[in-house]
Length: 293
Image (cartoon, rainbow, N blue to C red):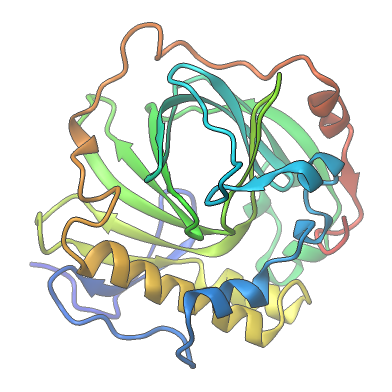
């Protein structure tokens, strides 16, 4: 028997989730106020991403929808940067629709973690964004991850797989529109927007859609990382992502069958972080609270 809408659970990563919709059913708006996608982004975007990257290279990065945005080539290694998190990925394809990357098992990453623990969820939610942090180097431990970033959109779509390669579900990660930088160390800059949508792999065409980390978004407001208006803008982006990706037929990338794509041996080699000044400086980062740069 399928769970009713409104059911709650805990995700594999430890976040709270709520069953908020199903493909094929009318979507119930999450935001308190309807607004355009551009208006929602405008409430959240800062030219320097509020200092989250602590890197002047962001000043030279070009919006992915810009005419001068650099294009990446298949097999090229890039850095995908979520502020304090940096991931190494390999390009699968890049065209006007968007960027597709592959993160093989064992690929390197840098993450902010609490000084007093090994994972952000080691800190109680009511204290989480006021606790000191440091950067830790680790590796992607799950099955290889295919990630697509539609051009100019404030989200990316992650295609998860089981260890035997079967589809495990699709993750719509809400994040600021991407900015790109070419050169010797190619990079994509964005910033995570806390809320995410998880689309189960079961019941094709009528999949369950779960909202993840609504409680964490509320804690961001309570602890001063977001204003109430910004939090509602994040919820509005979730609404618009659901409308574009889940209600419309054939919206990219869900309109393309990425579940059947497989990496060849060269593509599936774990990706290392480059030995560069960017990475060396990032390894040294720390802070007294997550509210500060």
